[in-house]
Length: 200
Length: 186
Image (cartoon, rainbow over all chains, first blue to last red; front, side):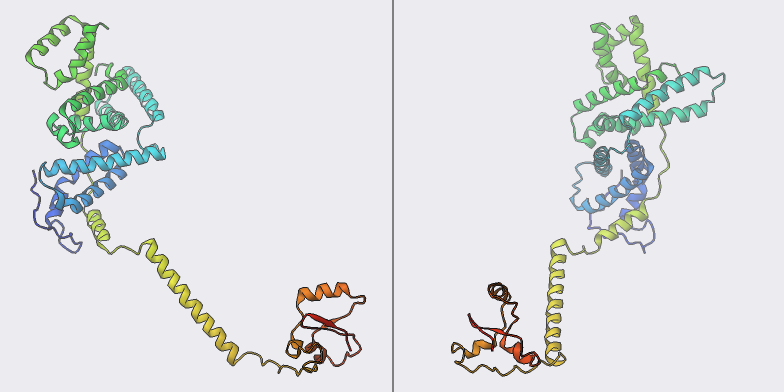
């Protein structure tokens, strides 16, 4: 876990040597996980990059208000998830199909069915290609979940957080984490049912 | 699906995360041994979780330059807000208007066309109704219209000044408006 510089932090300067400033070190340390979190939530590399960038900017600006009650990492995750939620709402308002819309979800179901047929027809399926295809499908189906369900799924299943960490990050009770996770798994199982039923 | 199956399936999520106590776990396991449908359900759930955990991380771009640029941009002083901009524009317009007015007045006084001296009034004070100073007053438009309609002939209506300015047409009968009265032409 990273330590947060307690002193008043000067704004990093582009003229400095990269990585010299303590906050720059934090960016370099966490950008991979924050980007992946945003990417899993948004399923859009460009937006994920923008959200990651904005998360660090907001983190720097709010650094004096960080009281250390949670870990810096959890705090940063919360900022990122809030930005992702804002993106999600903005996107829904625009009706722009970056996230899986209902239409896309139907398409996803068709993809699942088609993939299941293909895998049963293949004599010698290329396992690697199939794995790539399946991961892409899972990513899309997860991205199509409702925001609340998606958050617990990403944090628990993909980020490997414990129930307690998920609860702390989302600031919700553990019982809510359990029930949301249960609902999310049911939805995902239903949407991936055809593919899961092939018995891979 | 029986009530027991429904109950067991609601606990499967917790079972997969090892969050059932010993008694609950024993109950679920006992049911799974006897129920093929719930076994399939449990297997799908396990496979789903495997798949979710199998999604790899993607390589992240370096966002540090963008973060530094973003922080630098927000550190710069903010641009004037709408109200300030409006006041600034208004003052600019005001100054421009004052300068324009001053320039126009200056041009009128220095370089403007020389005005003809006011003609001497042929009407002596007191000659027409005794209102000499008002004799040089031009004919008001509305008045001219109403008067022309009231006269019998198309009489050109002139002010006293006009009649003097055009001495070559003395034959025209002139109706002069002097004050509020109409006097016949000479």
